Length: 176
Image (cartoon, rainbow, N blue to C red; front, top):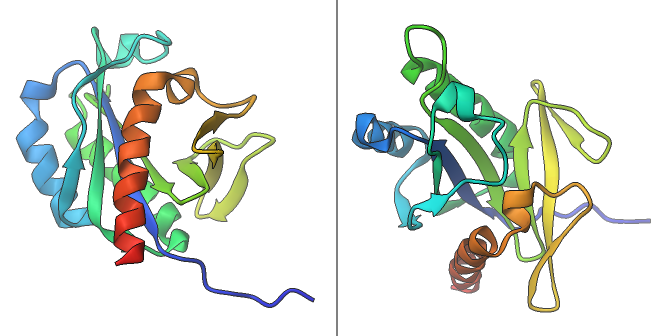
């Protein structure tokens, strides 16, 4: 028989995609701090060229920044965080209904990266409230391992390098 255990808290991250950072960055960061807590990591700006999926809505060229938050969170908070970031996307959207940014929250653990999504798929686990957990990457043998369904950008070197830095910070936090 397995005995239920409380998991370690996780490192909350947020990937932000946009082509118009200058139009909202300060206001968005203030809102994120209010909603999710103090930001203690911000990546450099990364190119987002693996897909044109968001081009029509967000404009081009799209770039990404990844943020890490100071407080570690219980994993069961991920669905609520996704609902909160969805609400932020709607609050900031253009008058024609298009978003000006895409917010993808996730949790970094020692052994994996899990992103939150509102879309079901075969490998995703339902969390409740219309939100699924996407097992995006595994961390094994000292590096991130892509899975057959990993998004191409998360399978790439640039994003994984940022995630490694976040994982290292997370390791320091949980080890005190």
